Length: 241
Image (cartoon, rainbow, N blue to C red; front, side):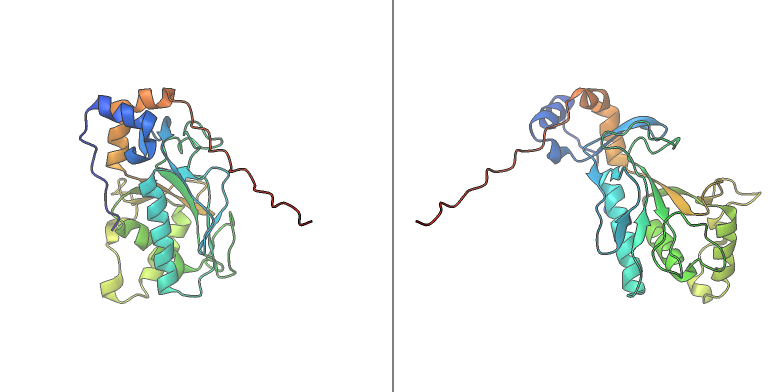
C-alpha cells in the first residue's frame, strides 16, 4: 500500500511563498484534469534495475512514480529472474497536451508494458503465445494493492487471457469476479479500450496533488521553470615542473 500524502493545511499565501522559495517542500501538484491539465513539481521516471523508459516523457506526481517502482519491485521479488519492464509515456515535465494521447496531461496517467515470455519488449501485441501471464498478473495485482489506482484500460483480448489464467490459481488467490468490465458492469476497475493490446494504461489517484492543484494551480503555472544549478567549475591540477 502506498502511503497517501495528506493535503497541505497551510494557508494559500504560505504555499505560494514555498512554491517560489522551496518548491520541493510542497511535493507534486496535479492541475486540472487528465485530459485538460498540467503538472507542477513532478518526478521523472528513471531507468533502473527493473525498468526501462520507453516513452519520451516520463514525468508524474511523486505518488505515481513510487507506485510503478513499487509494483515492479514486487514482480522481481516474486519472480527473481524477471526481465526489465518497459514504461511508456506518463506526462511532460509541466504537463499539458502530449501527442498522440487524449489524456496524460496532469501526471496521473501511465502507459505500462506487459511481460513477455521472450524477454523485454515494448509495444508488441500480447497474445496467448507470447504473454507472460504470471508476471503480468503480479504486476497488475501489485499496482492495485497500492491503493491508488482509479482504473486500468486494457484490451478485452488480454482481459480474457487473464481470466482464463485465474482458473489455474488456487481459489484463495483468485481476484474478485467483478474486476473486469462486463455488459452488466461498465465501471469495473479494468476496462476495455482499443489500442491497449500492446500495453495497458493506468489512471492513478493522488488526492493531495489534486488538492494542491485546485488551490494554487493557476499561480503555480505562472512560476518560471527553475534553471538547473550550474556545474561546479573543474579544478585543474597544476602541472608538475
